[in-house]
Image (cartoon, rainbow, N blue to C red; front, side):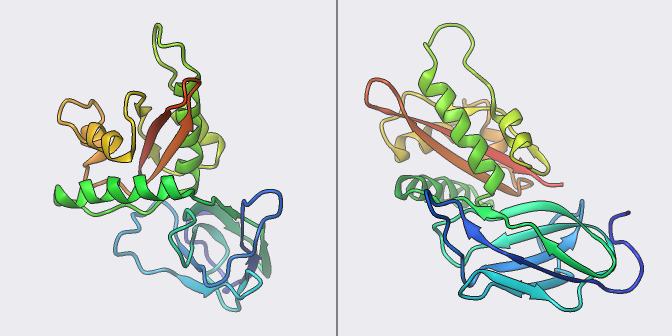
Length: 230
């Protein structure tokens, strides 16, 4: 089916939970939006929207025609990432598989806030936190934490992003293994001599993730994955 599709409108519904362990929790008040696929979301008007109930359920009685679309699920709080994924809607009723929104730690939220403050200070918009980018950034931070420091550092961001269902193009491994806290890490990531400064400060970037992982000597390693969509 082609983006946008054709034919009579379809119905769709689903359940939204987080990835809390060992028991995921339903997310109430999350905004579910359907957009055209392959189109920048900034300023875009969703084709259909819904809000999750206290049990995490949502439904749209009259949605877009059958076809391929982008599904966005934005949490009602700052403690979870926003999910972006491709969906294909068939004629009739569509039950969307239960997506899980990543729970953000307090330290991740602090780093995310500082990262966005750096962007705003440079005159570019702050970025929503993307679910797949969070998974990729965490994987990159874990790889750096396990790195011996010899040879070429690991670069698993793009592969981790793709395996997590990421959309668009994610930058490589923008990491900081020498920072002691979020303030130092984000300052280094926005330094003019940082090779990823153009992406971190780029006005065309769409969303991002920020991962943190403890290293063997008791410190933490930081990583950012910034995405451009489409």
